[in-house]
Amino acid sequence: MTDTTSTTHYDAVVIGAGFAGMYMLKKLRDDLGMKTQVYERGSGVGGTWFWNRYPGARCDSESYIYCFSFDDDLLQEWNWSGKYPEQPEILTYLNHVADRFDLRNEIQFNTSVTAAHFNDDTGLWEVETDQGDRVTAQYVVTAIGCISTGQVPQIPGLDSFEGDWYHTGAWPHDGVEFEGKRVAVIGTGSSGVQSIPVIARESKHLTVFQRTPQYTIPARHETVDQEFLKEVKANYTEIMQKSKVSAAGMPYEFSEKSALEVSDEERTATYEALWQKGGFNFLFGAYADISTDRRANDTAAEFIRGKIREIVKDPETAEKLLPRDHPFASKRALIDTNYFDTYNRDNVDLVDIRHFPIEEITPTGLRTADGEEYEVDTIVFATGYDAMTGTFFNIDIKGREGRELKEKWHGGPTTYLGLATADFPNMFMITGPQSPSVLSNMPVSIEQHVEWIADFVEYLREHAIDVVDADPQAEVEWVQHVSDIADQTMYMLADSWYLGANIPGKPRVFMPYAGGVGPYRERCDEIAAAGYEGFNMSEAKEPVLAD
Ligand code: NAP
Image (cartoon, rainbow, N blue to C red; front, top):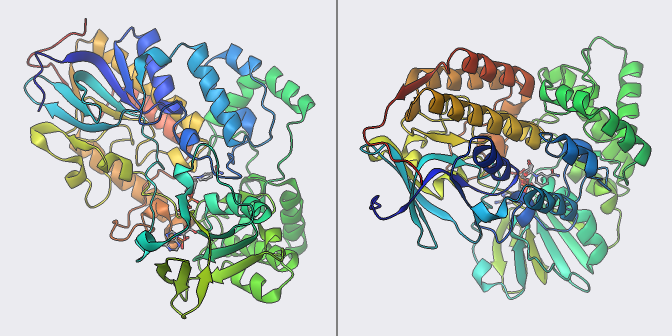
């Protein structure tokens, strides 16, 4: 593809400048002295937080742990204002990080990588962008996010719609005016559940089109308690350490009790206390077997259904909102601010599209399969993403002997540790498929991957190894392990994006690693200590050095 004699050569090309790409750049450039180029399709840093500017967008991890932990001064100097950080605050934080560590010079914005081909003869990657860049690199690191390729369902007639429509993950930077508008929101996942209460307040009328009712727990969002923050800062090292060895990258207390070993009264009291406390405490703090035992899970599910019946005043609407077809937390667990209360508003209607799907978008609104027409001015697609693999497939990635990644993964992604995939040498994936990633507090998993990759690259350089590739057998064993762990969980019992079920035709394969952040880290460390077991290493035929 690229003429290697006339192109710029880098030690590493990093794709994406969100949390992952920024920290990877810092490690490679500052700790390893590598000539590194980052390409970012946005006009600024931030990744998912650059794009997701929909009303109500905020993180479900508490702010004091949704940040980098690699720099003590950064931890001490940054003051979060929201208990759960809102999108603008996270984006401000990431811009601060970019400035503080002087990262912008090596980031080329408004640039999408279109192709990355491994050249078997030179042992180098040849990378092309939509801005006409053609460069070579010894390493390619993907920092492309797990949920970064939005999906707008193929509903006939969208082109004919005379109003405005938006996807939550590509929100206009100057906002959307809802005042006086009749709005449709399609989708009730994380993005829908966060945006619906805000759009309901701002618009004249809101119709929510719901395919699957959701379990969601009140977040109990508030401004950060300054006393709490002071205490956190005094104990940051321990808090971050606890997060790193925990199941989900959060320093919460995890219950070890079974939901089935306590009386009904005790169980209800526990659920009630955690419902009042809010956030992920309900999921982690209640009972250990909620995510592995259906009967235990049913107790939590029934408690939440009871809450929905209590909160939503119209019994017919409440009935439509009751999740019954999947266990609690088998789809991405949700936390919310006034979600169920929103359905008590006079200007909000709920339409069940499980039984009567949207058949057509007309010039003036939507028509469902029962023949009902809904006139709207604005449609918001909160319909999710082609997660985990979609963004990889948007890039023409070819490994050894021209093998296409898309072809290799046509039956589902196969990786070694979610960090590498056999036949794609010197390519590392930050929070790739089959690593804990989306089942964890992302910055914790990102830091672990970035540091592990940087250590590995340092090792390779010290040992004069130019080309490294995941061993196919090690990969087969890891993929099997990921699948065995998933089979023991409730995740297999829902149609979720974790399983690719939201994308027509996508193979039904559970993509993240459900074995926990702590055990995963331990395994990665053992592999490193054993001389990077499961990787094949060799010298390049024609090594090329960056200037
Ligand atoms: P999502 O969880 O995939 O939810 C998409 C919603 O759209 C679901 O209700 C889905 O219904 C519905 N939908 C999809 N295709 C449809 C179709 N053809 N017709 C009708 N309805 C359709 O997407 P998301 O809410 O954008 O969230 C994606 C992930 O991003 C989250 O799970 C989370 O990991 C992350 N996220 C996090 C936050 C946060 O931290 N607070 C906020 C936003 C996003 P079904 O359920 O029936 O498929």
